[in-house]
Length: 231
Length: 354
Image 1: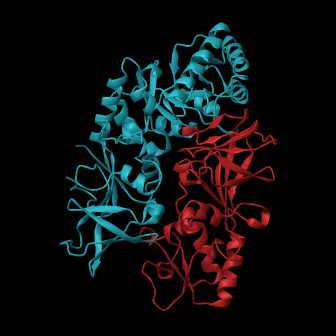
Image 2 (image 1 turned 135 degrees about the horizontal axis):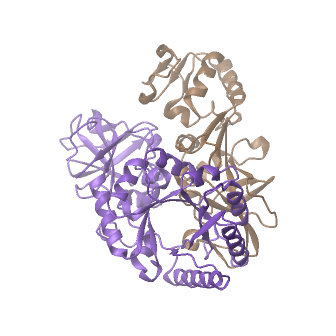
Image 3 (image 1 turned 30 degrees about the horizontal axis):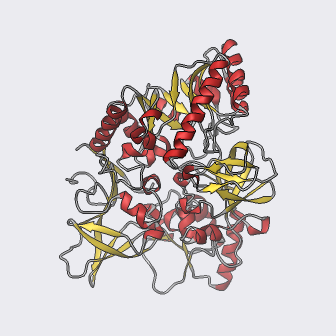
């Protein structure tokens, strides 16, 4: 609803179009007849950004969800809403969510509070995490309303200021807390939840495994407060 | 009961009658404390503007919007009631918020500085937040006197009016919440000793609003309970006299060998970890889910008279034999808040008055 707004907190899914082109090139070299699986708004990456790129790259047919059977500027003959029995359907690899493909999406949230906290203190709802020693906590403005699964509570890490920091306590509707140890981030810093392992980011597949879903199901359910920024 | 526009396709039904009932019950429960209704996160997935209007017609006199853009959207829609936003980033447009009479939570000095810098002729109405144990937003006990002094100075210069002191409970054990209330009272006393006596104190949300009367203070911020979902794990919404507001329904679109398919799937926020335990309701009877794809779910309807076009309820009011969002939460190892807040953004919302 606030996606792309500059008036509020920043929640961003960067969509790397060159990584997407790269993955498609490798797929086309193997099988020029494959069908790109772009259901659920290209699994949350944004079909409007990605489908024109795929068609230019040489993908001939794209599977979409029924609610996206018509996309402005795209000929309907390129889109299909039913399975093909003869052709390979490729999803996760194209988005860089499995194997050695390059990840297309990088999800980041804004640090909106930083504070010192003492050993023994509880963190977030239900105090499911207690601090073992004095530390610095950072509050990230993403929560389960944005599609960060509540099952990630005490289970995952983010990249913040060049280091992986554990998510501590319960994920709430709009925010979660990470433990920064002796490092002190600044309000406004960007924390990367998942993206490109080559740049030190956690992987969507790790987040997915720890929250009992597939990486495609994870990205497909990112909410509309997260701005998709293609570049 | 669900006949009408859109009943033939997959949809999310929002029972505004149930919502009004809940807001009335809750606001009467806590009176004379006032009720602020949380409509953040697109009114917990129910739809911002219709729920905001219904809340204000049913006993709430202000709305918790979380962040400035949501407040601005309500002003654009013509909502004139007090609005409260407290989650701010470094790019948050405080000038627009002040101009639109959105009251602002202040947890830290940087926020106060930015608000003072953005204030024009109109002072910003600020609610100073102290951290009482949650370790999220809010000034720590060490930071609190400094924040209060700065706010008082900004009040003297005409940039802000300190309208309230507030905090947020952890909903941990009753003892933990009692400790948090004591810390809150201490922070209020510290502020008073510095000359800060705002007219409004607020701390409780749904959980403490219902079962911790001493935490109601001047105002309760009700969220999940108003949507008909219990804030407790030992009582359902129905136990509390609340009516679930959201229902997710879809017709059977194909039927083969005792397996029915609906066009709702994991792309609609249906909790993947719930599959294996989850059931749906058809004609008042429960049927197990067999499998799920991004766009579809298959259901075991062997030995029953289910036909194409029959209505499947994933979750709803619970009074029709079908599951509730609370049951889905238990199957998915989460809470009902996540079930509704993450419910499909691609399915249409259909608003009903019952």
